Length: 271
Image 1 (cartoon, one colour):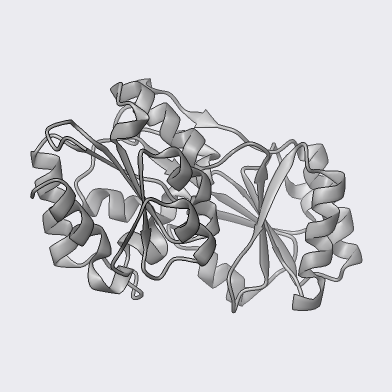
Image 2 (tube, helix red, strand yellow; image 1 turned 30 degrees about the vertical axis):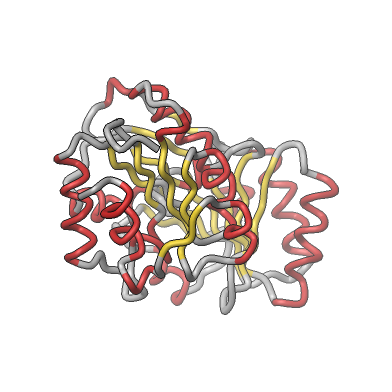
């Protein structure tokens, strides 16, 4: 690929840009800054909510739109006129899922409406984990507490029931929700609206900058990166990525612990 073209570089966070200690290495930061100075456009595309990704956005000195909740929320933190693209699940569907979750004796259900958190049951451990960024938190029966349509649902279930719940979601709600299972040790099912993924968010961003897909470089490591890696002209998977993703991507770079993002960009863009 001709190196003179402006690229759109999409970065997943956990397991990709971030090291295992959730930091960005100084070398990776340096290479990303060089890419920006050369006129390339860098954005974040993550499953995280905005409140727990905004610190990395500022750390990289970005001035671009960001993809959160795997594409369910796309906006420009520094430019309200860019547009706010929020694609939640309908509240009636969420309530039906809650009824079934209770039948399977789940540990808890967490609903997120952008940066507001709603817990079905009180759970200090989960509240500590998910309260990063000081969100508004409410606890109580979600069928009564949820005020609006929902950006994302997380079901924390006993391991033996995870696939049973996923089978129900696929059989009954396949047209309206998509779901994925978190990797061990978490037995969590993450649910967002059907047809929403990081690629859809990236399409909005690439369209804004008028960058064709063949000039998009996307980095990822997990199954929520599949659509984005497949969509991008250059889909780069980390050495630590799951095998399914490596099969879809064009290139495998070094791991997140070995500056894999920087290693690829430095060579590809002559930085």
